[in-house]
Length: 415
Image 1 (cartoon, rainbow, N blue to C red):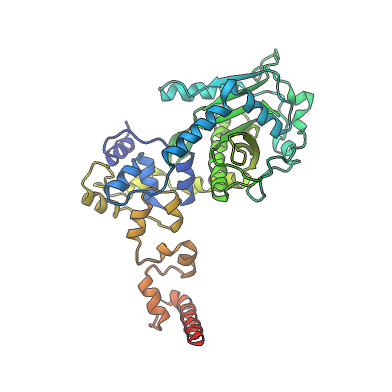
Image 2: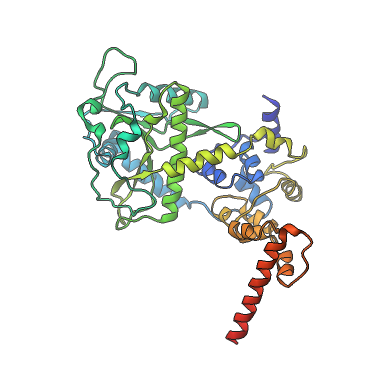
């Protein structure tokens, strides 16, 4: 165990680290300037237990009913060796439904290293040497449902270039002299890796489909419904970001094996219940925008070793620790609270209480518009005409005084 790993174990109290998933990475990359969250997630701290211990339990998350419903729907979609799932994915991609398909369950086994290696070996073995020279170009000629457009469950997909005989046939491993028609390949819960804040974390997408349209496609199964062609915008946006994390992880795997990352499509197949039934329906999500955002924010995040260098030696986030000690310890590591955190971070209510009286609690747009003025009390004082001590805040002070005068005029006119 390295010194950094030992330090992280001490921070979480010696407990086993909680594993990252696409949700936690999406939330972390959504606020890359929050040192507190980066350290806690890097250490694998049990944040729900920590939040409850300091008196600010998280108020979000899936209910047991929702989790059960999601598991039931996923099992239904994957029943019979994924026969219905294969049909949904192939039809949405605009390729013929393969007569032959393999199903590999990579979720079995408790040994992490073994699952990672087995997933990597089988996924890379599914690569075919007859991929298009420019896969993105081959796929980009056809529009896909994205976050900028309404979902249309019955929208017919135009046939892909990859559906031609040269691309539709299944062949043996890359580099093999003998080509054998093996059909499509579906990998259930493969274990992928991604570098986050200087640490390797493992991710588990619902499914990866290979040899459909000549490319890999991430398949996400969600239990939220699509009613009359439209889904909940917030849930759809979250699904797109989480799927982008899986696409990045799968592309990183191909890069490490000397393969073209472009073999992984930027189109994710999202499967949801149609209307108010359990009938599954497939849609395509174009996650190119989310890929750029997630990659850029991951690159911007400081290395965990550098963050630990600025963390006090006595810092602890052990959920079994004394509440007063934990509160004092957390206050030593800076947070970057914003109202958006309430929907994605278990410690958001603690940080909101801590940020009371600061402009950060009003949201990023307000904080940025105020030009770096941190205190609400100072904002009110400047608006009331208090002299400006810092010349860099003169412009913000003038705008505040103008806003205060306009508000007073409006109130007096209304009276």
